[in-house]
Image (cartoon, rainbow, N blue to C red; front, side):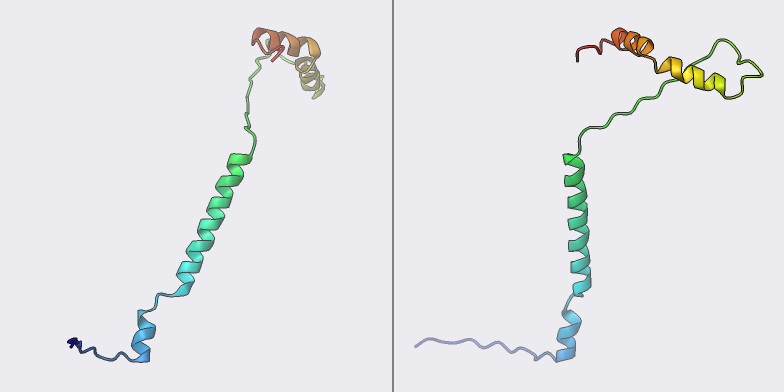
Length: 97
């Protein structure tokens, strides 16, 4: 015949059982945070590479005093011209890439 061993266990009240539960709000919050973080990382990985450049230009001649803002507009037009951009691209070996 099999011999059974009995363990004396103290019964737990319902309020003690509720105290042992972890609050579900923490788990749900962590799950949502992980989902948002994972989605942001995936979105960043799928985005194309983005590059930025900054250039400084030093104007050798002071602008005429009566030209106002037309001097700057003229300088911007010169910098954006095909001749200047083509020369810059050729010196940086960017033509044909």
